[in-house]
Image (tube, rainbow, N blue to C red):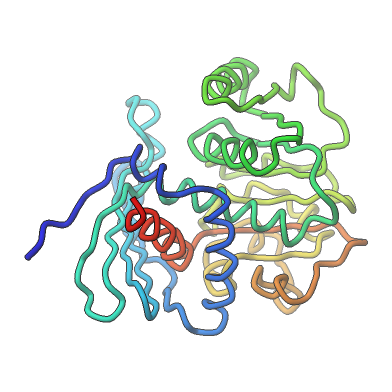
Length: 304
């Protein structure tokens, strides 16, 4: 049996260009909706100190993948990453393993790219300003995606305190992305808000307003909600995966959303979002999106 090549975080990131990811994710949303990608709702088992061990398989005609990751919020106090894991990529016909990618990097970059797909499909106009709520790893991936795909837009960050915002801005400056502290710059007329925290209670409570796209990313359990129920109730709601969000999207479940009115992101590829209503996109993730990322990585690896 041939040796299966394993790529670390740096190499994995180099294979996953944000522009290519957005295109691959758009195709994957349509394939998933059509039943061409098989991706069950993730399986989770508990770890100590509130952590969770997650299994996310997916398959299509060309490729099959399995992402196995751990999420441990308590690792912050231990000065360890909150996410560890790997993604195994196999041939879609034979199941033969081809290579292994770094799980947190795949998760981070495909999640940020999925938000950017939401911006492309749902935003009523070209975004001029972004606010990231959160200063963790997922905020860093989103800032990098915005820096590449929307370099003309202003980018702000809001953290738990101003020191966290300053540290985040300094870190992203080293990566070539300009970010401003929301507390120090007091941004007005933000047209795109993305919440990327691990908070169990709402971190975004502003009233929904037409012309502003709100994307909820961080919460993925029924008991967690980053966005206030009133904001959800007043918005036209889109989701990345209807089955998964019915089980995991605390933001929507706690707002008792009317699921008959909720639309998938795939539907927005064919029928535009309303331009006269506030728009909310809630994503919880799917193995189908990891599969899309693995397609991008596989193409990049073959073209080395």
